[in-house]
Image (cartoon, rainbow, N blue to C red; front, side, top):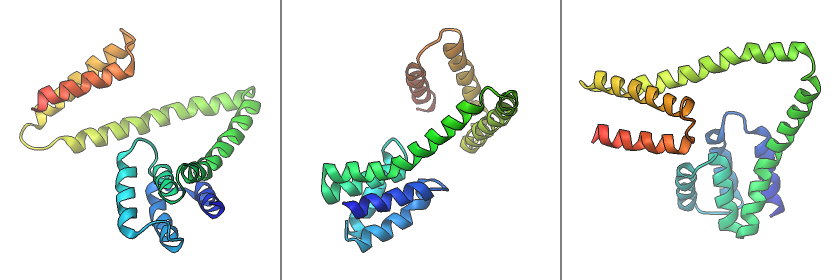
Length: 177
């Protein structure tokens, strides 16, 4: 189990590019250590991809569980998340110490429009990418109405996001059925 912990710890520190970029490295190590067969690995990737949370963390937890049981799942999970916790703690300490500096506030104020633009760009790409067929105008109108209604539910009525998600799902089923 120590080898599994050290392997996933290393992955946790080098996991740039997202969890999907780690799948080939995890597959190679799982085969080399005989943690699971290729078929079982493919199945684990499918389950990890459908589960909530980062795919690499889910995959590591599944491999750990199938190999060593609950202890293995916790070992792989710890190896994958400890690096993120360490980095987040360091960043928090640095930002907390520098937070009293006026220039740090200016940096954060400067970053807000960029973050907003990136989020809006993602919304645009997802929205435009989903419009197809001759009904694209109706899909666009439905989407804009749903955005307006959900915004009102959030801002004016201060509804919990879970209720808004349920409302959106029911609206999507009703509109697209």
